[in-house]
Length: 134
Image 1 (cartoon, rainbow, N blue to C red):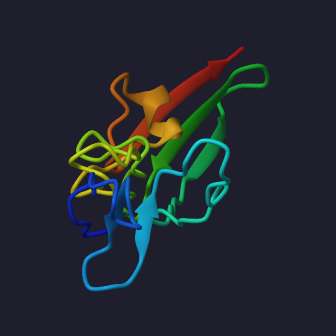
Image 2 (image 1 turned 180 degrees about the vertical axis):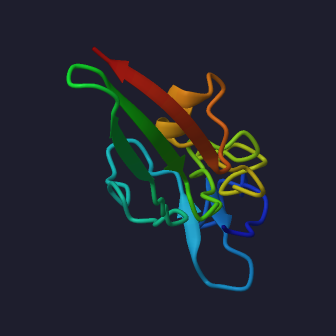
């Protein structure tokens, strides 16, 4: 997300405890005690987009017995959703970390797929089911 320089540790520098965003005049800084920071939610993470779908067909076997066939699709378009720096295993929201602001190549698992597969795969999941009601 951000290519940043090293943490500035020279206390004589006006950007002490800051990281420069390379190629820009912007700095991410740790505020001094008693000073206000930037506040919450000033940086947008990668977008999240998901489409789940399902279809069911009921078959009447007898007067009291019904059979239902169900197909459920989670992340049907197989769209990659990347983790935010807070959750990514290769990034960190801490300015002191060497991997600050990095989210490279870590896909997040969707809560709906975690209920189907215990490890919560971030890819497309298709589930079929039969239900006999009597």
